[in-house]
Image 1: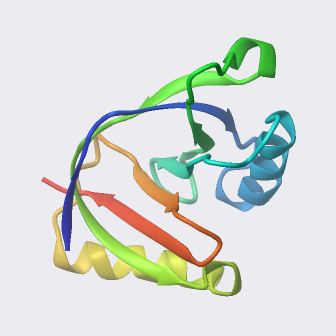
Image 2: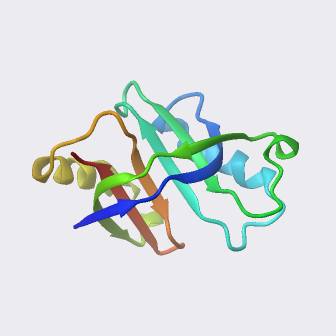
Image 3: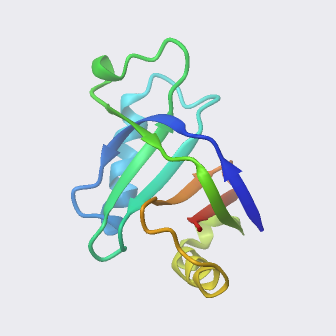
Length: 132
């Protein structure tokens, strides 16, 4: 399934150890926020899982002060993406890589944009693969 995303302004932290450090980076990001309510969270990978830059991101809300929170700002690039969904994602983290691999078999990757994990809820995770 295809989706067209708009640019998404976010606050983020870069994982010091790439994808393997993503959970710890999300824990640090969440600890900096006064509340998690009404927040949209994204995991964004520029490059490959082995050699890319992984960012734990949260959408910016009115009133947020990224500098005061100790977070950098960034924009997730919009455009055309192929989409997949993983239900009950906390119990299925091992399915993220294979789901992206399946999308890569069906679509042509646009390597100029990152792959995106959108944590819609505790139950739903949407994966977005940038496509040409």
